Length: 136
Image (cartoon, rainbow, N blue to C red; front, side, top):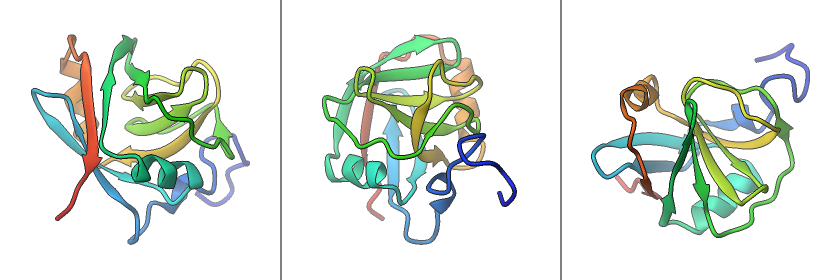
């Protein structure tokens, strides 16, 4: 990731998904995906407020819903990797991206493991998301 301009693609905190990252489960009722939160302040606050139950809205290849909590936004980006999990203070939304870019800058808080996000492409009626810690 070296050489990327700040806020052009990934913030430095986005790249901090390392050994000590917090693992989470995104439970869409009919299937679940594993993900890792980065070490940003926003991700830490999100993790401290788990479990969450979020009513989802689909917009293109993005799912989002109100978390009912406010997270800090320190490193907003307007482009991100497919499979990214982000937060937007416009509605306190948790957003899951699986094929498009955000409509406005967001705070990346994590990423779905590997290519598991591809399972989302085949789903049209996802309306509920439960997010909880992946305690192994």
